[in-house]
Amino acid sequence: MSSTVADPHTDRAFFGHPRGLANLFGVEMWERFSYYGMLASLTLYL
Image (cartoon, rainbow, N blue to C red):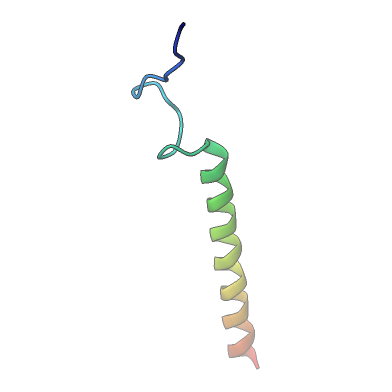
């Protein structure tokens, strides 16, 4: 029986999670940043 354990030096996971999760986190972070930035701009405008 063979095991398929990834080498830690070549593993491309993000803290044990898939790389797409880091991308999703980044997109959501910038979406929240732009939302609150626009909210602040509109509040100052009014």
